[in-house]
Length: 449
Ligand SMILES: C[S@@+](CC[C@H](N)C(=O)[O-])C[C@H]1O[C@@H](n2cnc3c(N)ncnc32)[C@H](O)[C@@H]1O
Image (cartoon, rainbow, N blue to C red; front, top):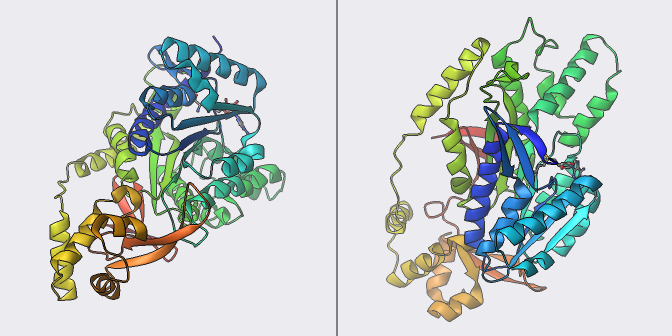
């Protein structure tokens, strides 16, 4: 069979992608949408574990969404550099559509490029700008994923007026297993005081978009990966340092970053048994949509509590994960908008009028539009505009603000009114990692409760 072959941990990635695709599409399906799968594979994966399974890969998981696309809004773009794989992908998509009883004409909304994604992504970005977009970057390693191109996508999440807007999201397979190998070469060349491995260093520079990664790598001994001196906690700190460094770069464009470690969980006597319990890659997800971290974390949480079969040397990791399990049960009290308004009134030491509360609530229910709307919608809906006295008061107190926002479906822009007060909407940058939440502020990450 011509399927791409992967280890068991791939199922975790595919389940995450599938869950996010389905939930995301349920939310955005009333608008023009594009999924851009830059490393599209062949459509199916052969997954080796206790037994071998055949699973639909990311491309077919996206094609499956056509079953829910009653408004004909979904468009799919698949990119694969390999000519033979691209042919197989094309055949698999056609066959999948036929067998799943999906309308055959959806094929006109599937575009397949046989290209290096980094060579065509600029065009793809330009051609899809008027839609809601989800970019999937699922490479084998790190070398083909230059930061300049990832940044090009990320820039789309920010409007030309400098605001982080929802509508562009990225899911990245952040291939630690390759980075580790490249770093190993870097440390080796340092140990031997040679520059033999300059290509690997170039690859790392390209991946991280500069050589700042060295500030993190150089904190650790050059023999960090050597068998005799291997120190799991140093390696863990190095990994986290680097993945956080990458996340910080994404924070220039996104408000929410979620990072999920994917472990080798193999249970068989597979040749890679030594890798059991090790992190193979991180899934990094970046979004400006307030509910996205919640959605993507659903699958992450399921996997955090799943058993990992560890070699003896990894017992510390086991303990570490056990401590995470306890955190999952923390009880969250739901805070309603009425409670939020009351808290804000206490902080501001003033009472709002019923009309002002109505305005706030009408914004609050627009969660999917970043708790705001263009002025003309508001005039239509409740007959108020930003020049009204009640509104002016809300702006003066910093409860509501305006910004210029580009229209997605046509040229031009309009005044966008949105909830601003921190008691109502939290507009800070957050990193979600292993059930912990970090606030990102002035370039630094700090853990929050
Ligand atoms: C890890 S696999 C992707 C698996 C796929 N997401 C799935 O779930 O089935 C990586 C794929 O990207 C392709 N590829 C590698 N380098 C590429 C590049 N620079 N541009 C586009 N595709 C590339 C490979 O041929 C392979 O099909």
